[in-house]
Length: 411
Ligand SMILES: Nc1nc2c(c(=O)[nH]1)N[C@H]1C(S)=C(S)[C@@H](COP(=O)(O)O)O[C@H]1N2
Ligand SMILES: [Mo]
Image (cartoon, rainbow, N blue to C red; front, side, top):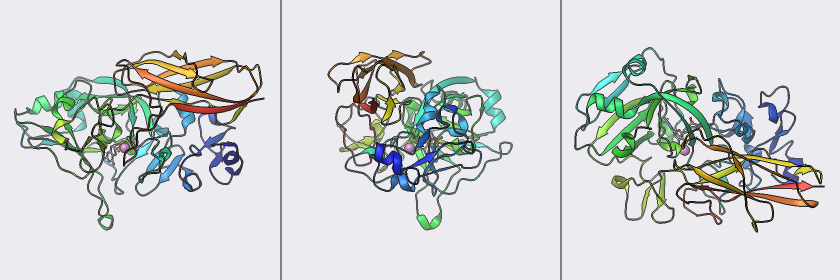
């Protein structure tokens, strides 16, 4: 947000954090940004801080279906608190699941033994696996695409990092037996559409290789607590490295099938044009001549502790903090420029807690002159990919990974 939005924001784009709002400590007394100023006209004004049951106030982008993003100040913590974790649904009817009667149905023509598993069967019958991983919506920062594209006008907060606990999908599938003709695994949650809106049911599929990857989990805990209802209670899929759309929540059924699954949310939704992105993880059974399902996240970074146009005194050190992530190769470097991109210096990386988690970083400098200083950040991963200098346009506004910028005022 720029200075103008900051001032007018008290009645529009900004809400002042205060005693009444349980925001993170670092956000108290400072304004909570409702998103970058570049969001389409009206987006900031129509977004509110609002709490779903059991959640802290989050930035409400839409209510029907519930789409709430996490204020960026929370991303200064390594793990995003469950009650501040973003919420993304496509459908309006999201019934609460009773843990004791819930059953996960396993079936499909390419599964040997159809079965139903309760929560205790999952907990007791399989090895428990813990994995830190970032869940990010493919459309995170969609609102920053120029020209604007339709869809939820997300700012920076459609993501969160958590420690997931569950069992390997592979172990569960192997118990039921996977036939050799198996091509994809199909996942459905309990949520459904409302007839009048005619939104197709949210059903997703994975290629066998990703479903059988040792890191793909059926998770029932996040950050040492049961999943919140809004994040998939009692169990959800965790598909590390891949965008959030595959992380099906409130799981109800898993089907192993012998044909490519043709549901609306696989085709035409969640597709990227072929050849535009360095699409590393292929989903061959779903590819067409022109497009392919979006799969792994692209390398990216975010500055988390600087408010746009924040003031610093000359001589006062500036500590820039942020996070960086990719599709699971791991972050190799984060570089920072404070001279409009002429020179770049490495940031200090935080602890490596696994290649599917985001990586914290920090950068310390003393501005040498008064006036406006732009801090730019650029992450690179271990296979040499780096952030985009120019946005790669695509119809649905996915994979926004522009080099990041935050402007400070040195006086
Ligand atoms: N059942 C169900 N699962 C779902 C969705 C949904 O609409 N219904 N949306 C997906 C999308 S697009 C994203 S980005 C993630 C978001 O996870 P979160 O709401 O826990 O943050 O959930 C995924 N799982
Ligand atoms: Mo998403």
